[in-house]
Length: 110
Image 1 (cartoon, rainbow, N blue to C red):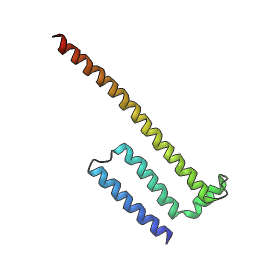
Image 2 (cartoon, rainbow, N blue to C red; image 1 turned 90 degrees about the vertical axis):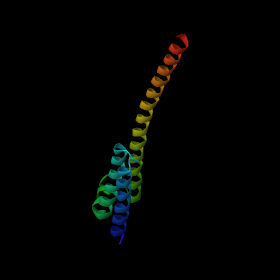
Image 3 (cartoon, rainbow, N blue to C red; image 1 turned 180 degrees about the vertical axis):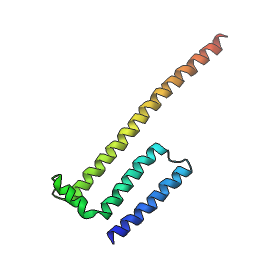
Image 4 (cartoon, rainbow, N blue to C red; image 1 turned 45 degrees about the vertical axis):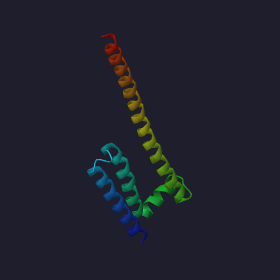
């Protein structure tokens, strides 16, 4: 039952992501992180025993700790991606502000 529930949740969220992409509300570069996370959730639900064995191999005593670490790393990846985008946008904003100031100065001098 857990596998079926997880797959239904996967399908519903994947459909929502694709709909947001279609409407151009969500950009492709952010959709990748969502789809990767959803895919890992679906794989973890379908192959629960194998993922549990893998977590024990990595040294996790409790499976839920492995899940928390995995999704914590995913969140860190998303935050890093957003920070890089924010830095680019701040640079572009600074450049645009300087260009506008130069244009205004040229207009007042003429």
